[in-house]
Image (cartoon, rainbow, N blue to C red; front, side, top):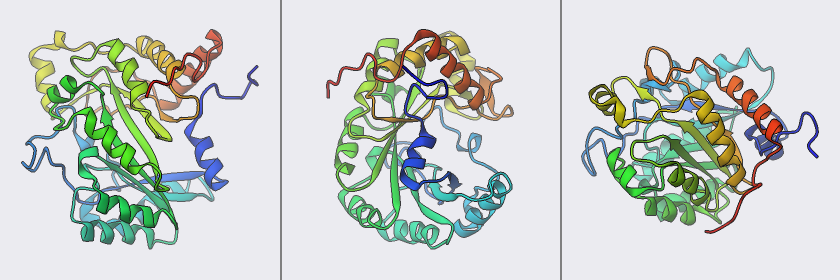
Length: 311
């Protein structure tokens, strides 16, 4: 039996409380990186769904410098919480896509700040190598280090359609290469990409587990100033965008099937209204989470209830 205030899945705040014994806040950092499918090494234009401005907080701008961004972020969150630890979250574009000396300089500038307890590094799986992982392994002996891989889908045809520039094999290779180094591993999936079926998304939620600790999920959003926005304007019937209730039901199915020990960081994402074209749910993340908690209780289900490990 679950207690009244007990989550029916492993939630992210509990993950951090287990590690640090207190609240931890991620501070988004723009390290001034780019991506291989933007600079021409693998393609141009980036992923068709991506507009980094749609999720970048105001304090997060590379021109401000890393230390300045950290200080602005602490001021932004400090009035809400009296005492907490902070992690420097290198979020914008591919944050392992640079020579090692550049990575060292930017990561270590962040870690030099007295309020920073570790790093979260968002990146593509095709921009890590043993040299970078060896260095992060050394950092992880002194600090919390998490590499958050943008898997997005396990379907290679879908990845090609959104101009991702790599297949699922790159994600599997990177995650397995990171495992066992003392580095926390996160994976990110988008549900509802064009060409994706319900079955392949459910399969993806299981396959992308691999040896990870944290899983981030969100629904596809059509965002302004992206190639996908142009495609949507030309042929909206090619997209099967979720209603809020449809997505809620789908997330329940995902939770039932994933490994019981994985921590779930996020279920939805809401772009600012000035960027969002569709779907317009008008709901905040905590409101969706409350609905999800209620639905899981009503259905008497929980994380891993229908899990079958096949990797």
